[in-house]
Each structure stands twice: as C-alpha cells, then as structure tokens.
Picture 1 (tube, rainbow, N blue to C red):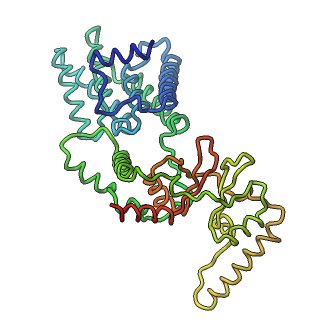
Picture 2 (cartoon, helix red, strand yellow; picture 1 turned 120 degrees about the vertical axis):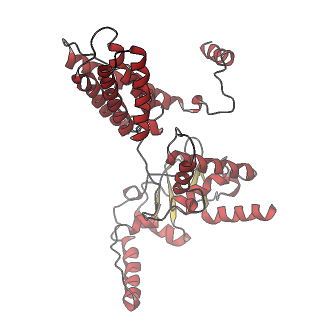
Picture 3 (cartoon, rainbow, N blue to C red; picture 1 turned 135 degrees about the horizontal axis):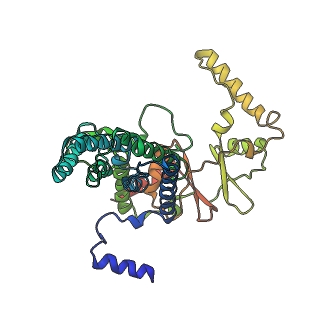
Length: 395
C-alpha cells in the first residue's frame, strides 16, 4: 500500500523522471547504510555540541549540517561533497556572513549581499558547497532578534560542528559506506601504464580537457565520469553481442582441487594439464578460491641474470619448483596458498562483460559461477578472443 501511494505521488506531482537517473537504482542495502550514516553523524554532532555548549548562549547546531549530511552521505561522489570543500565552504561562508552582519544594517541588503559574496568566494576558492549559503545567513538572521553574533561564532558552533561532522563522516565513509575502498583485482600489474582496456578508451585526461571547455559545473567527479563512460561502452558491446553468453563459450570439463588437496598434487595437476590456474571447490562444488602458478612462485627469490647464468638459474628454478611439489610442500595444502579474492562472472552474462575483467586485472581466465557460487565453467582469454573473432567475421 505504501509503495502504491509513493508511485501515485510521484506520478501526480511529476517527480518520476522516466528518462533520467533513478535514485531507486541504488541498492536497498546501500540506501540503508546512507540513512544510518546520516543518523549517526547528526546525532553525534548534536550530542557533542550540546555537551560542550550547554549553559552558554551559543547555538548548538547549524541547520545547514542537515543539508551537508545529504551531500556527504547521499552523494559522496559529487565534487560538492569533498571534505575540503565541505569544511572551507562552511567556514568561509560563516566568516562572510558574520562580517556583513556587522557592516550592513538593512536586513534585505544584508541577506542579498551575503549570499552573492558567498557564491563569489566559492568560485574563487573552488569551494562550492551549497549548504554554506545557509550557514552564512545564520548571523544575518540573528540580527532580527538582537545584535549580530561576535567573533566566537566562528568557533561555536561553526568550527565545532564542522570538525565533528568532518571527522565522523570520514570515518563512516571509510568503514560503513566504504566509499574510498578500491581493491584491484588479483594479478593487476603494478605499473604506471594504464590497464590494457583503458588505453583504447576514454581516459581521465580526456575528461579533464572536456570539463575545462564545459560552460557549467558538473555535479559528478572525473573518476565517476570515466567509469560511467566505460559502463556505457560495455552496454553498447552487450547490445552488439547479445547472442553469446559466458555459458556459450566456457569450458565445462574442469580440473579442480579442494582446499585439503596437497600442494604437491596441485602442482602436478598444473604441470600435467599445462594450465596456469586451478579452481578450488568445496564438497558442494562451490568456488572458494583459486590456486595458480604465481601462487607457487611468489615465495621464490628470482634474480636478474643474463646469458649462461640465466639458463643455469632457469634450470635451478625448475628443479626447485619440482622439489617444492614434493619434499618442500609436504604437509601443506592448497588452502595455505590459494587466493580467495575472486573475480567471477555468471553463466548468463554477455561475453562483453569479460573484456574488462580479463584486460584490466591481469587475469588469464575467469571462473563462471551460479548464484550460490557453484562452479559451472571457466572462460580463458583464448576462449574470449575466439568468440569475438567469430562475431567479427559474422558481422
């Protein structure tokens, strides 16, 4: 009933944008985290301010902190929600509002001049934070009931509210919303070069050049613009390659191991089948990890040699790996070395979704799993190249 009423309200009052971005596209769990973060932040700001300023004549809370909470937690990717923009946008605005409230006596002129100077300041200092305009009007409005606030207004409640709000928001964004958590995929090359797929696509410098020529401020970060364009390209590829999915090209007769398999046996399987990766599955054939040749090599010290010494070292490395598969690995299992940071795809995913996975993460194969993470296949780079080449021939 509530959902029907909400839809009716959106329809009647034209709040439903059929062609634009929908806030309902944000997962419910993420929306719940945003709501929780806003509640925690505002509660702590109000609680600490009340405890610190109780018994004084200072205001306890700036109403503009509520508007800032919407930006900081609801739109964390916006340039308007950057921590430095939030802090200086409020503090400089408060200083302007306080100055004008002491210099001008006419209320209407005072309010108009304050807001216009705040906008100018935000342009000059690259600190565009809309709630700062409301903060600037606090000392202006205070003159209607008495004298303008003193200089201590910048400390209480402005600086106190800002410091608490900034500290709490940074903590919540990192550990609750996980806004700044970026985890590269296993095998991502740690070099200055761009990922292979990004070299032929739109790059950040292209976005920066375009933004400089744009006549208005965009409420989206450069990195989000690049990611948005990448997703749009992927959607275009999906539209062109919808006839093929992962289950159409994946290998299904797989060589797998369990976490209890010995490292000696795992190494023997890699050598016997001339493959570089083994999926690790449990008793229900659910994927729990992968073990690859680099997992065996990462504990070996490999020096830079040339000529004859290089050949001798290669022979020694081969013997050492063979030895590690027997004596050295005795008593150790796959669970000791396997990687649990997995990049996977679903059987019904279009093959175009595999392109960024294989191109940008340094992977040679992607496990294909069902909804309950049951392994059903593996797609290698060779499988994908062959499929894309076949599609190109057909087209």
